[in-house]
Length: 337
Image 1 (cartoon, rainbow, N blue to C red):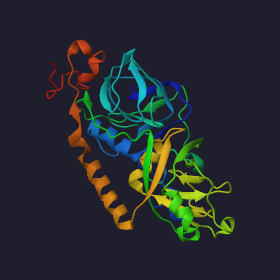
Image 2: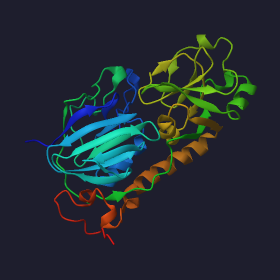
Image 3: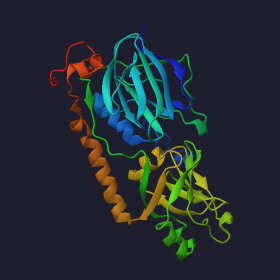
Image 4: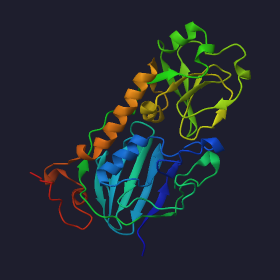
């Protein structure tokens, strides 16, 4: 029997995601991929693997069963999770025994959680990626009854955790000037960095609407701006004057005026902001944005070294099986006391 994870129950927004499809914007296809790519890197670090496909869970997870023992890792927005009723630590790796039920409930913070498996999920590739790109019609949502194929796992430790900065409740987003920034009146540009915003209920993989505390934004004749290339992070001002932050599956051209662009390093924060979260924007220079990107890449490269054993007394570990290797032997660098 091939390695697989059986989906017994599925939340409303389950898709297989990887790093997406960079390089196709010229042909009208945005990159897509995981909404929170930092969460992809965190899950891979917990399992000691690179480039694997994860299951993205929007809002809530589902009920799963493995056809054989599997290493798993949980990253992104924290969700209530158990194995056969025993609670699991989020931002950590565990062993999912064959036949055991992995139950992942609603998010307790943030918007998108991720389930990783040792060996990664497998699926048909199109344009170099497995990621479902729903707006482009590539792939689709994972439905109940699906058997998600899992690749061979070279093995490694479980029972490891990562210290993760809280990016699941809104906060400040750094932005740089966009192509139409200068079209907006100076008082609007100043107000944009001074007032607060609330994440609207309307959001999907294309983008999220944020409502300003004050009046709306706009430019004279803004609805007749010539269409030009756009990218994730661009902040469009639609007809009602509320900013719309474009995300993973954004369109590749658009004619709405754009006031600013959220830098790539802060895209996980806006993607993970739940409905009602409070947000602010802060202007930075292009040099500062490039420095932030370099810092982001360095921190991601350091993630595998930051994963540490979960050390607890055995009596306090309801998921004790998750602190073993996929082979069944205890991890040599894990010491309960």
